[in-house]
Length: 299
Picture (cartoon, rainbow, N blue to C red):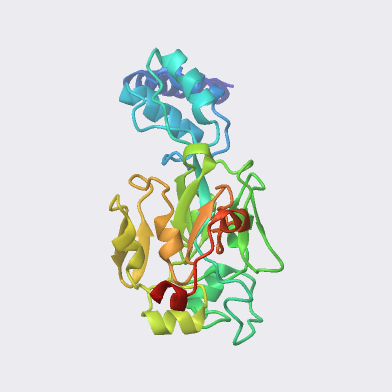
């Protein structure tokens, strides 16, 4: 009986001492978390896409609270309305951010870039990119396996079965950047939507020399530099045989689009150009006086 009583007392004493130690440790090593972090996280869309540059919505909420400023911070999924709510919670000013969208910088359709081989492996762009160059002669363009489609949480990108290229639905795209990260060839870029959703960009990423690039794809940029010379705003640079249009400098004059001999520069959501009048107006010609023949003028 005494042994049982001693055991009970000993266990009780050990438990009491352990409880005191744990309580003291919890107080000493307690980590304070600002309650505003939870409030900010609650108004975020909880997509956890990483498009904001932080590990999930909770990480973004913590960064907003700790920074004390919303400059340079944006939730691409929630957009400006969500940032306004965050600003109200923190008592800060929500910086106005320019809407962005994902663009596919490859025009290597089945017609422009014919297949030379057939890939029968795992339907993954990452696997295809790491094991071989692709089914066409272009080692820079879209592989067509659809990793970007699988990465998109918003059903904003799909593969076109006719062209073999991904297409972005602007109405659904949140510019989270998941598709761009999933593409092993970096053909998807997050660019500003532009005024009236109009933008101009080079739809090619091929860095081969002109003749090689054109042989692989009839719509490839050949690095001729004509677009660079014609741009009045110095918005186009040429590096590694590839032209690139800086969206911050581009004024959408579209002079480069007209100058490109390959049609590698694309203008989105612009009205169609007016057709140039090749012949003079017949009515104007009728009102003009007839010119006498040259022989009569000599007389």
